[in-house]
Image (tube, rainbow over all chains, first blue to last red; front, side, top):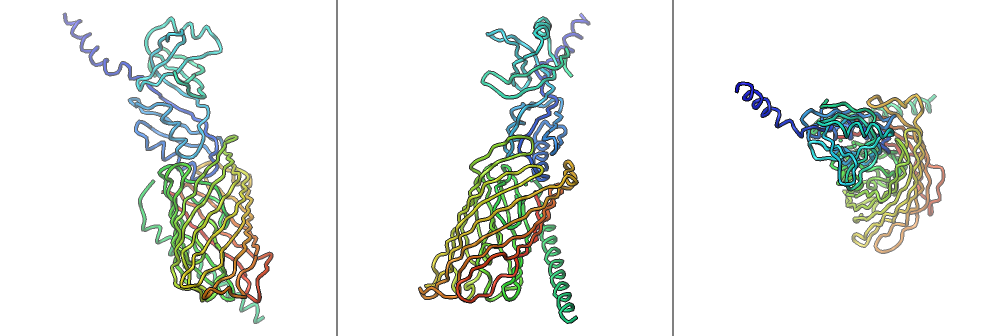
Length: 165
Length: 295
């Protein structure tokens, strides 16, 4: 009985964290940013977004690096929109994201974050996708994403870890 | 020897004024302490395309001088606000320090009002494309309305004016180039009217490799700027005045330094061509220093 109560209590504590998997790091390539005030404006805009732990900008590499708080509800689209509002173009991004993986109606693997953002998983090696589909539970993946489509953002996988980061 | 002393005294005077103006500008900036981001990060005299990001605010304190017979000095406070990433609103307020009777007719800095005019403007970036990291091709439209801060200029009643300009160009981490042109129409005031101004501008810029350090290190670039103006004849009591109006081209260097949210730029233009109606004093130079802050 004691064990049941203990399991129930642990389960209740774990409940709020289910589905809270999220975007953890974004390395966003930015086109069109040419000067120090441009970098300053973008860095400040990103740092002011709720859920951002830290942000830095490299002018020479055209790269925005954002580390996100563990409990953030941010989406990659939110960060890309902020880049466009600064007057620049958000191109490809390398991201680390945690979420749950499901297979959609067409059989494609989709990773969904706690914020409801969906990433359509792609891999050079089909075997990697097969392996993921056989496993259960949350995953933390890194990958490269370019543009969003109606059903989600395509994410080309680089690494896959079972469980949350 | 006398000539040398005289030149040295004049130089000292100019340096003293610059010091005074920059100090005043710095103090006026220090009194403002709202804090948020990006605006005047282009050339000093010529049209340029960049607009602020959405919701961003910047301020320029500008010290300007021109000499036509004698020297005129003024301060300008320019506020810029990004309504969207493609629409920037600007207010430019002049504060004359040393006036002259017959100031040169022209837009001393093309992105702001003419000598003595308070100007409100909108800069609309209507075309943009981003070929690569740090690169932009873009085109912008500048529309503005001005009211004079004085009743008369060169003995002529000054009326409100309307201005429109268009500029296109390229910006990158190494090279910059913008070309544009515009027209300023002066309305009639007490049967007088200042001559309209048509102008074209061109600028090329370069950031040497030694200044291509990454943010947040200082960022310097140099420009060569040129302005050509066609100024119409002034009218008094409905009659066109002789010895007013004409064409002039000016050319000169400028430099822009950026460090985080601060910018410092300065430049000087010298006349390289002039064709004035009748007999007129020619403009000797245009001098401009700008201290910018991005909130």
